Image (cartoon, rainbow, N blue to C red; front, side, top):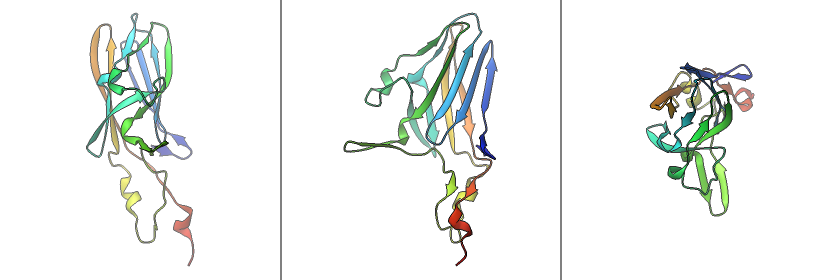
Length: 163
């Protein structure tokens, strides 16, 4: 998902709708442009993410972390309008007492002892997670499937230390 210092982007276009997905370390940023002639809805309650065979509901930036993800209202984008937001899979949210943390979707660099363990380099080209986003366009609902995988991973600085 990284190439040099810029992230890869996933672009989907169909029937006047343009969806751009840009993964970040703990969320997926997106923009949706609607030129379909009718409102477009993102059906959050039917959208999900799968990581290592673990399925998770997703929420978007307009939803409180304390709310029920299965009660999210659809995001409605009127014709000629656009929406910029982000998608956060619930499986990344960890609550420990009153402390909230969000795990990364994928590692940026190998923070393990690389001279003994090159596990992170085996992630290149592997399916790390899938996003299933349900859109309603012109009254017809469809599920879009996006698969994300790393194309480059930086090695941690300590991987190159001399002993």
